[in-house]
Amino acid sequence: MRILAIAIAAALLGIPAAAGAHEGHVEAPGAETTAGTATGVVLVSETARKNLDLHLVEAEVRPIEKTLALIGEIAPVPSRSGAVSSRIAGRVVSVAVAEGDSVRKGQPVVEVESLQVGDPPPRARYAAPLDGIVIDRHVVPGDAVEPNLHLLEIADLSEVLAVGRVFEGQVDRVAVGQAVRVAVPSFPERRFVGVVERIGGQLDPRTRSLPIYVRVENPDRALRPNMRAVLSVVTERADAALAVPRGAVLGDFGATFLFVERDDDPTRFERRPVVTGLSDDRWVEILDGVLPSERVVTAGNYSLQFLPPAPAESDTEAGGERHTESDSTPPPGSLGVAPWLGVGAAAVIGAAAVSLALFVGARIGRRKA
Image (cartoon, rainbow, N blue to C red; front, top):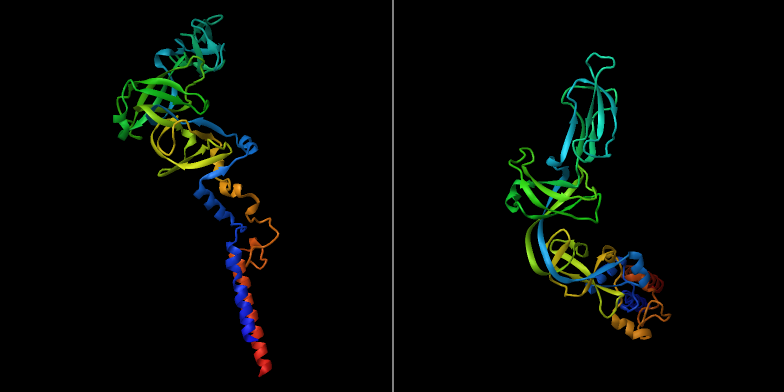
């Protein structure tokens, strides 16, 4: 009987290997993610594709530029701005415009009553010195004014300056005449273009940076003074490079990848590691990993990282011959243990079986004694 009990325990100990190895076994969530990374293919239905709002473009050979990104802001062009100031001491009687108003050259904007004695006291009217927009107003009716005090500031914003800051170690990469693209958070889909018009004469002693000035056309007056801006200064150019939009490339330095749509099956997307080269504010050069005309995902691709791996195409072709979790008959040697128990649960069952066998054997031994 002792030998029989041990044999039963040994048979039960075979459960973990059988339960963990059969084809219908379902891996833990973490193991599934690992498998998806290994195969590099995810399956996306048409419905999921619409929900993720996937955008795709073809990888193409095109010119690409290397850029230096600088933080800056928008400022009026000094020669296209002017101030309205009083020539006499007195009191503001009226202000005909508000900040943001458009004015024409010669249009009356402020009236000041003199402190000189009179009945009524003499008044002076001041006009706009140029066509433009009122960008600052310093007074309201009733304010006392002194000679040369600025009352209003007016600027012609059909052209503006994008003023960037170049740190000391980057000064040698910037020169007058370089092309620049300017982006502002207020208009994320737009790029304003210009060239480096001049470079400052000295570094700021606090920030150790040098200002550069880029003149930018602004016909619709979208850019306003003091808007934050990012200046992409073109420092290098390749005339022919295989490139994709920046949004297509995911990952960190040394581990970058993107998703490519399969030519033979538009529901399958392959995760490809890539080697990148030059990059600017719009494009990234691909040195290895993608071929021209292959379609890459540029929007919605971040979510593709977390989709489960696509089933192997050989498994799909096998059809009903494969054993799956839905099969009612357990595979040989599994003893009917549910696949979801896994190796850990089976090990616990095996240990319990050993304890039971030893207990039964001991009771039988005592009875014989």
